[in-house]
Image (cartoon, rainbow, N blue to C red; front, side, top):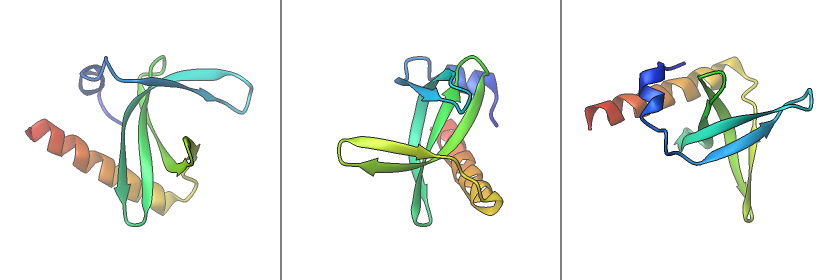
Length: 92
């Protein structure tokens, strides 16, 4: 979804572990939270796979929940919004 050079600029980012369906977990750096239309999303960098992952993000009391984006159109909207943020940050 993005190149490695861009993501490595975020080496000091906070990390979380995602539990996968097979019982394993992967470490991800938190790139950021952004919103589009009426939903919020979180962009994560899967460290071992060196790829960006996008999830629906929802705050619940003092915790948060990440859900997969299952609708293709919604995923496209989230990707476009993420790329816009990346481009804005490159211009800064």
